Image (cartoon, rainbow, N blue to C red; front, side, top):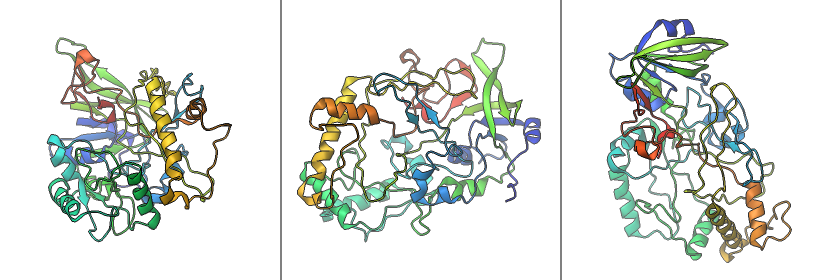
Length: 421
């Protein structure tokens, strides 16, 4: 396949002086920034150009590429005592330039609405089939509230398609009823109360059933704008500063590595860093298909990891997430594990399970010590790493302000998941 016209050679790229340099394509962000034709935008992209890749387009393929180093960075934690001295895989997508949310499980979840609502609505085309029974025993009042919620808070003309899985099966309904019986309520509209049982839309096109991404429309329409240049297989390695520090460190240019050589490129306005976008990831592929797993996660762990210990961006990262460093996290996961055993033995669903597989190495799965042993041997992260350059007050060790500008610098912003407080 011939390279698209918007892909630049390194010689063309370094000859240009840009207004903005982006440290990753950040598809939707690039679409918005490039709307001003007077701004010249350069994108330094570490990944390859991947078009029409079935591993990405087919939603069910999401788990098969997690172990593929051409799709992920294959980053591991340093061994620490709490999770049994294991090297733990930390999901970090290489984020192909042609796709967004490429290796996640295509779930759409967002935080509180607030002033970001216009941005959320602008990003999506939401499709809801009202003929689908999302949950059993949904009342007319709940159905009306859900319809009103969609009108007020969902976008209808954005680049990314959002839709619900279809149809619900008998076992889906039984699972929901079992959760309800065990005291976990259903929420058709989980606004302000994102707890209990609720359905999550997916970034899947409702007609083609392919994974949807900003490249399908947003990037596809704007990437040929004359004010955009993209260089792939390039790794930003260093920021170069102005020597005059009276007004804070002003970033003048970016040094990057491309196919064995080091180059520099200049930005007149700002340099915008983005290591990777938000991706919801899952577990490794399993060798058998006649089983089911209940995925258990704590969403707000108290354990806090350390900063990356690495001076060379091209070297292997040294990361310590400190999983289970706080004993409370272990107690939460233990409670989840005990609940899962109660769930599969409840009358509504127990007939769907022929047997319960005892985890390897666990002799007596009744004592807390045995639960904890299993947790330490199997705990792993779910989501993309975040929060390493938090948007917070400087006195609270924040890195970026509310405009995402890096403290103590000029013309430098961070716009990826690392800014989450």
